[in-house]
Image 1 (cartoon, rainbow, N blue to C red):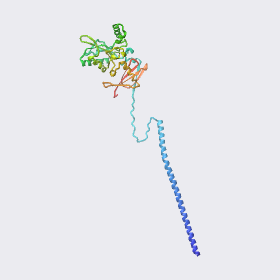
Image 2 (cartoon, rainbow, N blue to C red):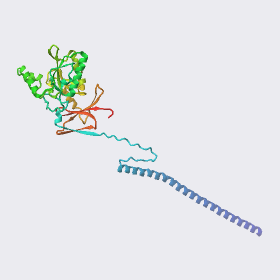
Image 3 (spheres, rainbow, N blue to C red):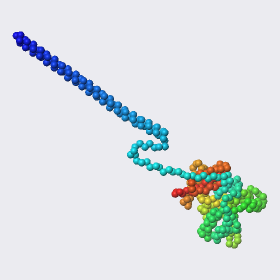
Image 4 (cartoon, rainbow, N blue to C red):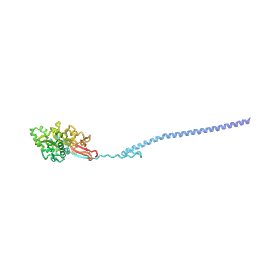
Length: 364
Ligand SMILES: [Zn+2]
């Protein structure tokens, strides 16, 4: 019995020992698992934290880069920011530099040039800067001359000759008579005095037909009067009608205008004179022919195209393109800026400034 008991006790003790061993092993295993789980959790947290932080760091970098770039731009504005090495090479833009030349004009220059306005309010100051030539040097059987020694601006005389030859070729008419061109002040005074006598001292009527000495366009050498002188020796007024109308209608092509129109006598102060032609040259004669302006009105019109505003652009029937603007006089010296080597002419307006006419060329 006892032995059995002992055996049982031994068995029980063995059992208990085994149980203890098992419990210990289980506890150890659980502890290992817990530690492993803790380590795994720690690793996961750390890795998650690291991942979370990474993009934040990446975001900071461009922000810094941007700042740096901005600072660069601020300190060196003239240098473009080149970001990538592989960016295509930027070709430098060709520098467009319009070289200009300055023309300095004096107060006297207001009264010089082919576009001067001459009338009662704006007398001629006898400052023509061109040599006059005898119209007789153009002698032609296409028309006649009242006399030799009638002086004229040579460039205008050339165009007058061209116009009268064209008229003759068109009509066969050869009895146009040039009766008056340049007049000095004494000649004008003589004409004025004789007309005043003719009108019995009536100054108002006289001055409708004859400009006051100093106020005549004939002083400029740019105005001409036409008449008729028949082969039988009879003289007639030229009235610009019939076949002669061709001249009055086409004179602008040669640079002339019919200066004293019947509808503008209140502005010009001169009666209708279909025989009196004034040279202005192209494009001005052509522009005026397309309007109802008399020359007084035209000079005012040009003032609406000031140097620092919109200019007047005009294409002539010749195909030539022009740019025109007005420069008011600044007193003793007026400076006009023009592109270097441009093709231009400047004329005073005989009142208060200058008219600049530029011929435009597509290929400078
Ligand atoms: Zn005249």
